[in-house]
Image 1 (spheres, rainbow, N blue to C red):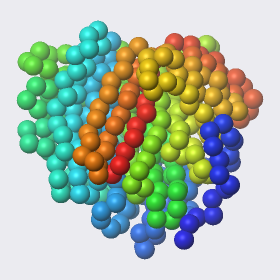
Image 2 (cartoon, rainbow, N blue to C red):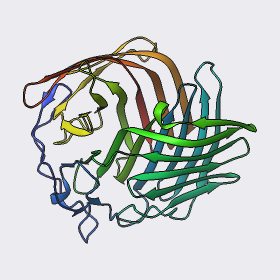
Image 3 (cartoon, helix red, strand yellow):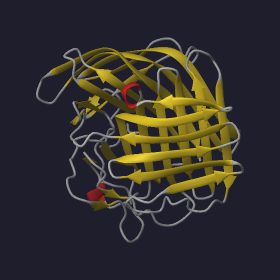
Image 4 (cartoon, rainbow, N blue to C red):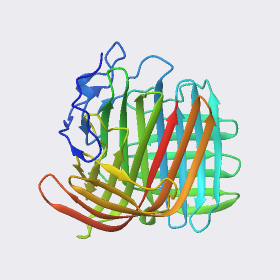
Length: 344
């Protein structure tokens, strides 16, 4: 049985989304989607009680940007397979060190806790990634032959982060929690050289996913952190394609720590033959231009299983109209965009 979704909606159309303000289970006892879970939140209120085995997807992705580097940590758990990785990219060069890979038929990695409050850890040969929630922050640890990461991510006391449930049917659905405008501090050691990460000059992005996806999926995601033209702290979060034709979006602005939901399906335009050409993200209330500076591709292709990601780092310029009619304008906000294709 399919959920009673709205008529097919494509990029560039507005919808009405429900804000959830109390804790709610993601799944019914049968393992199917709980209809009460469809909506969005300002904090992590969804209890991700996935059931069964074989099609569940659980992932945690962190990216920390400093003036000189971009550091990423990832645990992507798909029941039958887990990807564990850590990377370090020097921003002034094309050098990226990426360590890790896939491990088959892994343990649960601590990712079955419905409240996501327990440490999560996964290992692939000599690569270990451990993520430990701590109050309003998270400790990030990774160790490999060439990279060691020990960082603490911080959020301000009044910081809001968006969670949203995207339903394709009562059997296929995804909960995502996107967060940015965070800071980090600690140490990263690369090939024996220590690099300090300071709160005042760092930015952290978090992407959490729990759900049951279709076999073939395709999405855009973009995130940024900076200030608007009035000097207010600004977080940008945009997504597309995977949410089209559903009653949910993952679009919002965070201004001085508080979320402003953008309930529009956005239209993404870019040239996949030239990733470094400008991208545009537009909708009824959004007019945004992204200018890439760097492009990174990751590919894993085993015919039945495919994971391709094309990520660009650069800056956002544009404007978004909020529900109250206020127009938020910004320019040269640092961030990233991506196109991802999966068969999993």
